[in-house]
Amino acid sequence: MIGYTSLGTNDLSRSGAFYDALLAGFGAQRVFEQPDFIVWSAGENSPAFSVHVPFDGNAATVGNGTMIALSAASRDQVDALYKKAISLGAMSEGEPGQRHENGFYAAYFRDLDGNKLNIHHMG
Image (cartoon, rainbow, N blue to C red):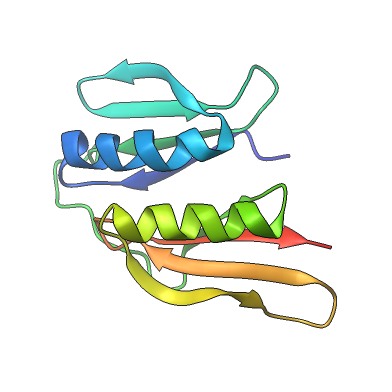
C-alpha cells in the first residue's frame, strides 16, 4: 500500500550517509538521487524511503506526532538496526522491547534531523 515515505532534512549529505548505513540493514540502497533529495529501496516491488531538502526553501522541521515505521524480519534485526542507528548518532526514544501482548516488538529513535522512526517486528 505504501509507495514511499519522505522526511525533510537540513543537511542532505549528512542525512544521506546516516540512511546509507542504516537502510543497508534492510538490503536497501540508493536508487535515485538529485541535488535536493535521495531515494532508497530494497527492490523493485519494495516501498521506497527518501529524504528531501524542503521544496519551499524553509528549514525542515519535525512533525509533532509524525513517525515512520520500518518493518523488520525479526527481533534480532530490530535490535541490530536500533543499535546501528544509535551508533550513527540517532537519539533513543525507546530501546527495543515488547510493546504489546500481540507480539509487537519495537524500538524508537530520532534521526539526525529529529525525525522519529520506529523499527518493529510482529510475531
